[in-house]
Image 1 (cartoon, rainbow, N blue to C red):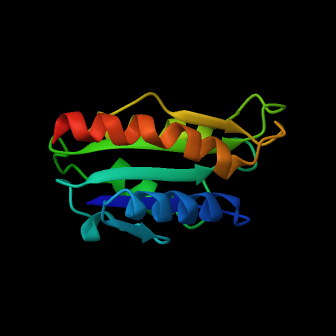
Image 2 (tube, rainbow, N blue to C red):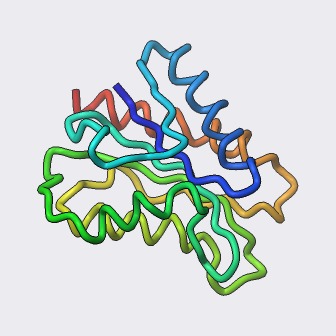
Length: 148
């Protein structure tokens, strides 16, 4: 089971998450989208895939900020958790993909283990963000299979 936690301000990250979820289901995985992630409703024995955009000065989208606050304030042990992060950002900002980095750090502070290095997608590059995510996805799937 893969829990997909979505942080989307303008809809681009949500669209990427929908495409990734569809591809995971086609590959035989159960995938659940969380558009308002809540730490109390997520299973730490599942794989968590965070897909978020960065907006403003490295800020988290409004819909995932409460989840980040929960992670920062909660003291629960997430050592059973494996996760990956896809972040959309604009490389013309010095806070490029900061939202994903912030969430990755918060998860690791609770003991969660990253499966792969964060995928950081530059929205200034011609390739569509969802296409870049789908090219990366087999690497995530292979990493998950090795851990099963």
